[in-house]
Length: 442
Image (tube, rainbow, N blue to C red; front, side, top):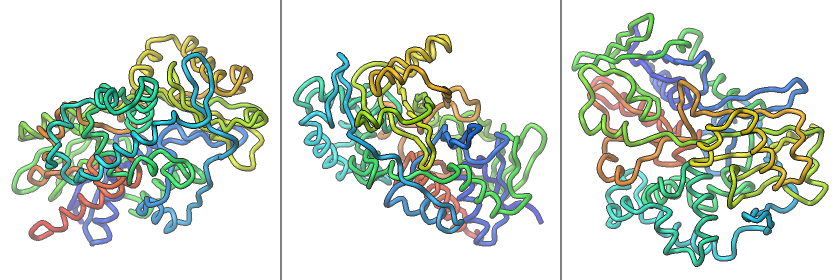
């Protein structure tokens, strides 16, 4: 029996699309460039069994699709570590328990903006054009009562949610992202929010379960797709070693990576322009591993937010039942780029100095230090996700999910709910599959 649909990419979106098609009786084949499934998730195990999630790692309430799949395949979760009091670290090294006093008021205002955005069509709102031309940084300068609060919120929102600088993100993109995730509280919180739980064994365990459910021959690894021919009769998908004919194709990649595939005929001008105007986020994630989570003895949680320096935020990623402590740090946007220009030794020293500001001098002496830069990953080129540049929602947003003939688009960037997250990736894959099934004769 031949292939009816080719799915490009074995991340969560591609696997979800293939599963939805398979359940409807459609034969789908998944082509994946990497030698593994899962896309932007990757877990590394230390010799003692310590789990280090190098990519996406959290799931939370209202993420119904990913939580439903975890339940279906019997995969457990455990709560993120929650000890002590989180802190905001000021440029002079001073500590403050919790956010600046007026930050909540500004977030509330931003949430009211988000409620006015249609997540399926952000470009349609009455304020869309103005918000799309306004950077988050510019808006914060007028909405926040002081520069410190504006800086805090800029790093928190643009960095912590989109791995970018606040002058790189439009107000419209920020409002869309908040609407997609259910508001700032849901997106930013640990307990009760998007960072509430982690997956036992890491997110790759779920990706592997999805791939296994497709059957032994459905996923082909180490098969990067280089070209897609498409016409009214069907599609022809080319890898380095093979060609696969099918009725339709789902490209389950971030838009900038989808744009690197050669299409024949070429993509319409507006769709191609979109792929050039949705760069990937820029983030470096590092894990410092210690004999014990020593910061807890001082009443510190390991959860901190820094107003200056190479690290924007830290979390306690220690495993329950393990004596070892794991302090995980994130660097975003311009700060991440500055770190990339350093030698490995200078970069590690800079990051450990930042961790010492958060957790104390002992943070400079980890037993192990593991960093991962998704921007250097050939088949990802950045994380957490791609986001439209200033003005691009209004100019090119309608092309984001619009099929081009028999070519359909998935990936978490195309989700309307929990965009940028595993849950959004699954939603997007299922939506692309539904489009194909709804085609005449589908």
